[in-house]
Length: 195
Image (cartoon, rainbow, N blue to C red; front, side, top):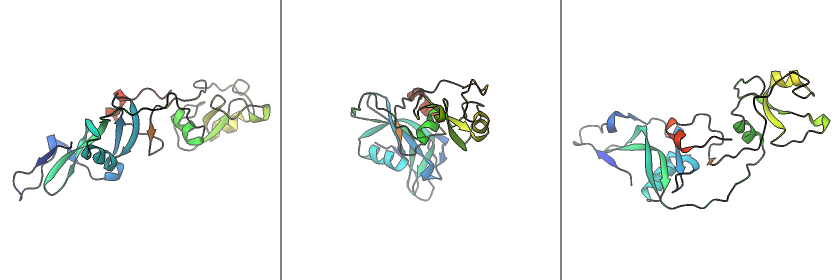
């Protein structure tokens, strides 16, 4: 249930809860949803999280450092909520092989020069011209400069070292927002490593 702090006098504006700042951009707020067992399930909008709290489907676990204000109340903004009932999920879902998930697996980082960028290409470790498959185990994120330098050679032939051996990822939760470049620090204790 949402807890509200009401202003003592109607003439006074509501005060922030515990010195937290008012949330100015509702569209930017994201909330981590945990299963009843505290395993991460999904990232949703603040609007969806508040609806789950109001319907008593979920309960708050952690609040952000901001508040929502109305003319008469101040609400703490949740950053982590937990479902009251356990939701059974399929064991070991396979993550779809696509560009978005590959860049997410590689943390938007070139796997050769280690430069983080939003302008990446895909590189086949064993080139397609040599029979290399298009799979999790053979494709990595690569900047344009490194891709041009490697050409149709293997990393050993091009004298370029891979950061790590490519493998299929095991993302354990989904997001309505696709990539999650800025993980809220409050979420870190609930999220296993992406690999």
